[in-house]
Amino acid sequence: MNLLVIHGPNLHLLGKREPGIYGRITLKALNALIKNHAAARGVKTRCFQSNCEGAIIDLLTANAAWTDALIINPAAYTHYSYAIRDAIKALEMFAVEIHLSDISKREPFRKISVIKPVCVKQIKGFGADSYLKAIDFCLAAAGKNGKHSK
Ligand code: DQA
Image (cartoon, rainbow, N blue to C red):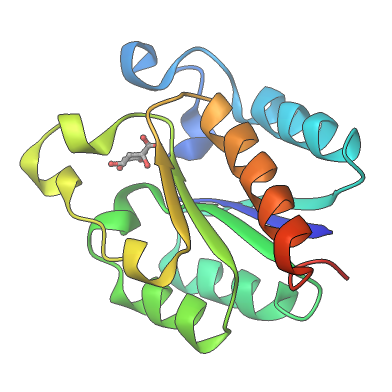
């Protein structure tokens, strides 16, 4: 299985950014964790971070043919990017939305995800483990119908 991982805006600041909410793990360490967890299960990964909506759409487009499953933390774009939502839908991606924090228990604007309706699942509130749970979910889903494995 080929797994595309996209981290949205401000996630390059992980480790320093509000550690009480997002934890102390850096983006580099998080990507290593993701890659190791995936590799141990025979999954190939491509990990990207961008602070720009258009760049995220370009990454989705450029990697769509390679990708069996997308794990995306759209960060603040979660709450208002119809453009990223439309890209996931248009590219017909098997997508899992993930969050480090539990967005349902924070400020009211974070409770809304415009990305969720185009994803097969939303996983939130487990810190870095949210990504690992998403990998396991993608593998289980691929196992069931074979649709997402190449
Ligand atoms: C986040 C939650 C978003 O509301 C926030 O804008 C982020 C990170 C999370 O992983 O918990 O940047 O997506």
